[in-house]
Image 1 (cartoon, rainbow, N blue to C red):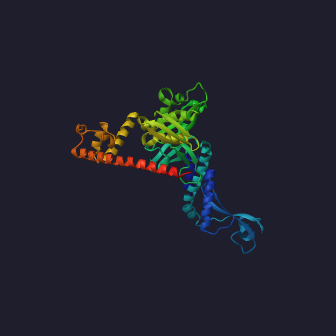
Image 2 (image 1 turned 30 degrees about the vertical axis):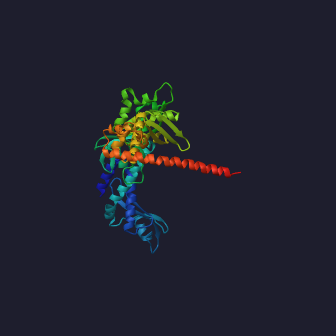
Image 3 (image 1 turned 90 degrees about the vertical axis):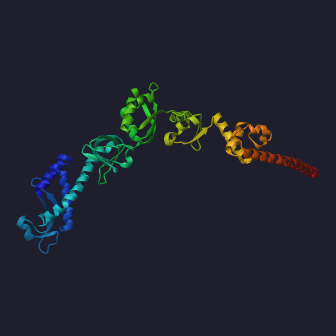
Length: 437
């Protein structure tokens, strides 16, 4: 195992950037732990590795006694053979390498040292990346599957879990990839760098990287609402009246925002001018929909938006995405009220009149619609129509005309009774008034 150990130490130092001293320290601790489990050595025990020969030996600190030694003691007669001048009560370093020590080291050292090396590597990774949390890092795809994407970043590895991947994007081994560093994981056994491509802050950092005005603080990102892989709304404002915040973010011929869109797998980016007036800000965020009115309820933080039928689809967006992202951006609840046009309202009223007429007269919906088109909206109104008038309406069948006649007769029969009840009620009221003093 000696030559194999030396080769391993050399490889780890050159390829992993971990010094031999670090590896040896981990190795000594690993074999010491394994040795303790397999035998009953002295309490004060050390394992030492010879960096020149690769030889491993176990050493114990033993107390020199005159007789009846325990596991932590040695007889004076044995001690003086190696250490002339040793006296009773002295503490001596004594090699206690057992015959099966090599077998124990070979069986357990490899797996234990691997664990210790991972810890040492994680310490190095932590020191290198702890100040980069929240920033964009770039690496090369090691492999990608349904569970996530493993990324090689310098001499360490990162993981983009499935939930942190932009839906629909595909990567292959060797592809360059950028992501936001969320955490340096010191505990898990997998890659140490936890990455994401779905965070709002990933979009924020991309804008800072592409737009110098944002990096310099001239333009400020006020808020971000995002549906990863589909659409994002980014609200921006300028701290310099001479600088157009939207123009700065979009760039010449849209180059800046296009670079960000390409990085996000063609995710659509809406750059929205922020306004301290909430109504104006909402109107900007709901673009391209044109709003008729905006009503605010500060107590419930609810916005009621009025739109016409033509703009309702734009206001909601595909799968209600436009209104949902605007709601996240302004952090208010949004209700959308669709107002009818005069033509739509007229058509609705005609449908309601036809439905009521069909129910009362006992005729088909088509016949009722034809009557409404000819100006007959109620059964009472049909009482003024002559037989010739009804005969002129081609959509009416003989059964329809019979039903209409019965409904008109019933309406006229009910009308006199109503008129008789009203005077009777007035007489009773007058009698009551007369009885009062």
